Amino acid sequence: MAVNLAKHQVIEAGKQLVKENLIVRTWGNVSSRLDDNSFLITPSGRNYFTLTPAEIVEVKIADLSHKGDVKPSSEKRIHAAVYRNFPEINFIIHTHQENASILAASGLEAFQLPEPSSLLGRQVPCAPYALPGTRTLQRNVIMTLLASQGQAVLMERHGALCVGRSYEEAFAVAAELEETCGRFINERFSWQAQAEKGPAYPESRRIQGGFSLFDQGGGEIKVLTANGGDRLGWEGQISRAVYSRQAGVNWIVFDASPPCVEFSRLKRPLKPLLDDFAQSKLPLPCSAQLPFL
Image (cartoon, rainbow, N blue to C red; front, side, top):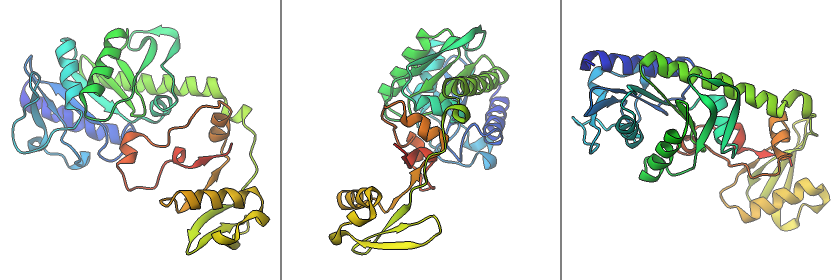
């Protein structure tokens, strides 16, 4: 593919990902094969809506060397490995689409599709976790993709990877993946039907020498850690224990939303953050709050 056309497609793909809520801010990445030896990829940490052709980085498949001073995406290893192992693939997008990311954080190794799909195969697998940008993550994703009949894999606690023979096909994979994951979540967990509204518990925050509990009317009850919290029931005892043992915790929120209640019934650990959220200073997502148990 001509370099200028490929750069244009990569830029447009980045904008489309943001518009369709498949990625957040600069997280995620897009690439396009140039030829058997190289590919173009989005740069690291730059706004998708202001990208210029000069910021799209050309990377060698064989050794990951790149042209120019712009730093390519940290996940260039995965893209290079896909192009090396799948000569028919010409476009790749790593997304953080909501439903796929939920399942990627759920602990499932794979989930079955009701009917075989030409794009997703018979099931969508999840590649085992590894730190972003590492050879281990590259190996996990490629081995999972090689063993799959489809063109998408979940990345444990890290979103999804969708591949296609063209720009259009890669986005079709992402769209079908999101719809399929959403349907699986609704059928498997049925939030509205199965989760009753849990009781409301007070939030709390750390203060000098103790913590404050906030009742449902907005009132504040200050408790000195040294004096306990027993008189306030188990809510006060939990707050006292957390603030005493976890110096970095300044707020506690009890989340009784249906998804958190339903997940708590599975009796499995809930990983608090997706990798890229962990690198952010934005407010934490719902899954970073304390679920009602």
